[in-house]
Length: 304
Image (tube, rainbow, N blue to C red):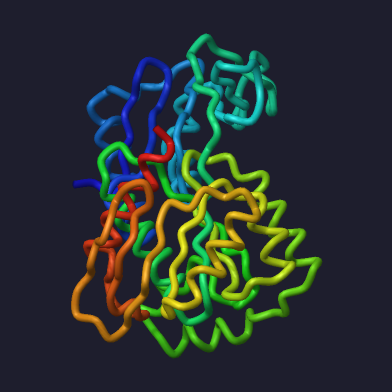
């Protein structure tokens, strides 16, 4: 199965992520698919190409390189602008006076206006939140038709979304870079991170926050819509429940992170997913764990 899907529907190039993979493999798969569409004559160029769907920055550059010379203009879908309820595209490439860079192209294609889930993964320090975050990205990406899980690292501990992939390749280098990037958790950072969460508008957003109940986390988390509580200490779960509830967050999962356990346990699925996930450690592929798979399905279901 491809790690990146590209299909032409009329004058719209529909793109989306497929199975989870490193960025280099995603770019290679996207290039192969574009070459296939061009060589078959399906992508043959023309007046205007509209592009709709999520893409990483390397894939954006690749698509531009492959098709920009074939079309007089290329426009990209932006869900934040335009006529309410319909898709609007922004002209990003133009070789013609017919379209100006930055010009909006409104369409009659319906765009469902809905609240996009912003799910915060919270709980005490050393519970495995960052490991769970990366495992969820992989698990969700393997669900057919699932939205791309956009991750916001809302804590200045130096461990961004890059860390897990880097650690699997070179753990010592990843640790050194993390130490260099680490900064203090200040009110200024909290306000900035809260702005990231507030403006997030992709179909599924996952927010990773610090492991303490603080005013800074309160500022950030109140911009979210849902919460997953992950704790290595069961007795600390109630205080995180109270914290999330005080912010008006809907708790969708309460999970005990047990590093000594040998298997996962799902205690309940509705109305809240509860149970245990085992051995969340860096360098391990935990995306296929029973609890991770169950949580991935819960998060995907929030947007339906």
